[in-house]
Image 1 (spheres, one colour):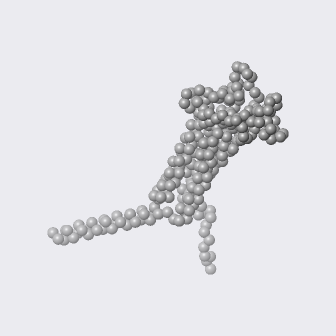
Image 2 (cartoon, one colour):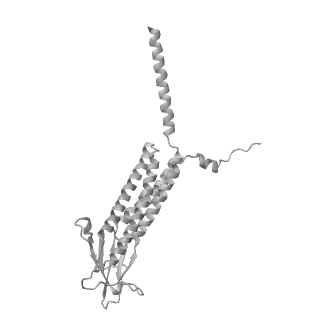
Image 3 (cartoon, one colour):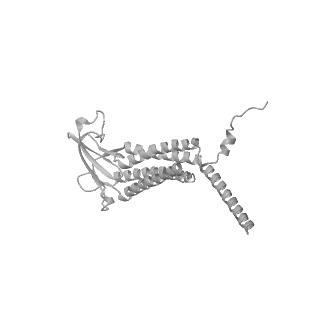
Length: 261
C-alpha cells in the first residue's frame, strides 16, 4: 500500500515539475526584450504626435476660409471660416487687410465675429453663409468619418499600452491595423469635407440680395488633419513591421561574426 502511495506521489511531483517548466518557458517567451520595448515606445511616440494633430484638427474650425472681395465700396468686408462642427462669420476692417490682397481676410484678423454650431447635427437644418446653403448630408458624413477615425485611433493606443504593460504582443498587430485605419479614415474625411465645400459654393440661393462672389482657401486645421493621417498611417506601418518574424531581415542583414582563420 505504501509503495503505491509513493508511486502516485512521485507521479504527482513529476507532473507539477513539468507544469512548472512549461510555465517558466511560456513566461520566458512572453518577456519582452528592452530593445524591442524601446522600438515600440519610439513608434508610440510617433503615433502620439499624429493623435495630437488629429484631435487638434477635428476640434478646431479653421478647415476652410471663405472670403468676399474687397472692392465693395465699404470700409468693412466679410469673411468666414468653418470646420466640421462650427461656422464663424467675421466682419473685418478694410484697413486691416494686407495690402495687395484682393479678397477679405485672412479670417484670423481681429473683427466682429459670430460663431454658431451647425444645426444639422441636432435639428437637421442646413446652414446659410453668404447666400449659399450647405449640403448637410456631406457635412455630416465628413464629421462621422472623422469621429470614427478618432475612436479607432483610441483603440489602437489602448492595444499598444496593453502590449507594453501586460506583454500581450498579439495585440501589437491589432494596434497597427487600428492606427493605419484611423489615418485612412481621417484622409477620407478630408476628401468628403472638400466635396462639402464645393457643394456649398455651388448651392447659391436665388432669393435677394444677390450672393457675393467668393474665394476660398484651406487653412491650418485641414493641414493638421493631413499631417495626422499620414503620421498615423506611418505609425501603423512601423508597428506592423515590428510584428514580422526576424528571420527575413536576418537573412538580408546578417550579423558580423568572427572570421574563420
